[in-house]
Length: 233
Image (cartoon, rainbow, N blue to C red; front, side):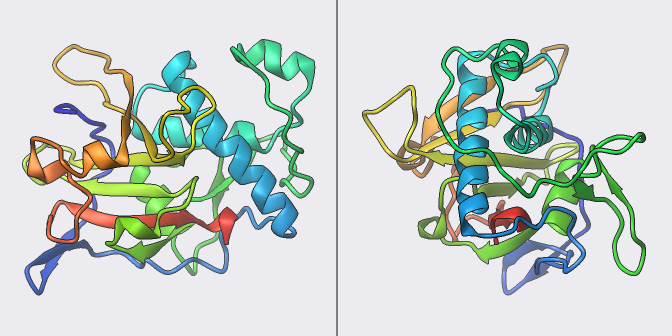
């Protein structure tokens, strides 16, 4: 966990001794993906967490940093999960979750899944970096890890790194590791000629990480907080 994705440096401010991103942390009413009902939200949550989890078992070639892991799980959670899809994605197992029925439609220009411009601008795209995922496509729940539900994101800012922002996905119970129910999956990101890798850790172990800057505690100024994707509102 010493090298992490370095793609998304937001402006920062210090408030009451706590480092916070100078971003709007409330969900945008113009976020692109708004699922129709609770059934669709639970279907999305199941697929999103499974697809994040499976990257530790067999990472997709495009999952090269923390934001790419989130984008991949988000996009593939919205697809029709046919046998051909499972073959293409190369899943080691295929769960029987229902599909999301209210996914936005792809266009000739791509699949506009994420809001990528702040109001009043209106722009959507299939690509969004970690800052944009947090700023325009998720809402902040606070800095208490007890608020985490499967599919939520943990967001860290490490100011000593050149590009310091990092996302982790809280999976919770894992299809592949049933001895705990608090799994977290993340990509370390490339650095110093190393492409990085997907890693998996229990939240309880992360909370006792040898480097305090990676602990998801309210007392850790590098832990910005817990965020929930707007699709799961």
